[in-house]
Image 1 (tube, rainbow over the protein chains, first blue to last red):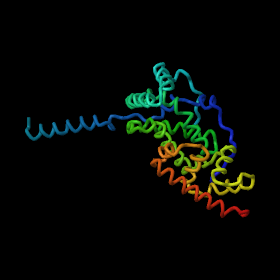
Image 2 (image 1 turned 180 degrees about the vertical axis):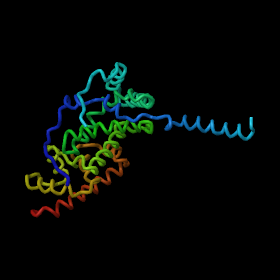
Image 3 (image 1 turned 90 degrees about the vertical axis):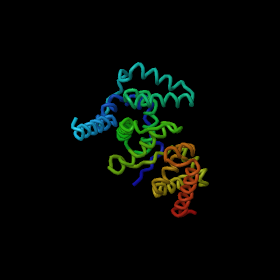
Image 4 (image 1 turned 30 degrees about the horizontal axis):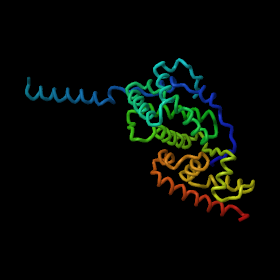
Length: 59
Length: 210
């Protein structure tokens, strides 16, 4: 059920500003692991192709 | 989730300087500054601090008006910024203000909280705004009519309620509504008009004095 609240007291600008915590937000952001990076796939792909070429031509 | 008071040292001097330049810049220049900050934050999330400082209150107030508890509003606001930073690499500047992207995340986080029953959907209305809205709805402003209107408001579909809320109680422009709800300005106008018709229908149906 949706509540309708009339003339609700809004927290003051100062109180809202006090609750800013960018460090806490940063800590919760998941790190980008190399496995998610296109560089990782590029390197893996390049290595795989190189190994296949080496195997085929038995260099 | 509990959050500690903000420590001033959490913002680097460079970030503070960027925030000051963001505040003093013109609307157009502000966009350019924002875009450059976003590009830097994509590489290093700590550069996002000036935008966090700039939009935190705006996003908090948007959420606070839609949930019943202040603590829940702070928690959801924090989640919005965590999500924004997590998916910042997907953000592309297409001429729309960055705030509309944050509002869209806030909208989706709110819906998630309502689904998870972490917060209750609330419509916060200022009595002065309600009086003005009743004038626009062509409804006499008295105690009984207000009661009927507040009774029928929750009967609207959520999307219709959002439109009425943003247009009449928060006084947002159709352009802004469109940006938040991912509609064109004209579509936002048409849908708000339809929501208003629906509200009037419900009002007439539930008002025995008419």
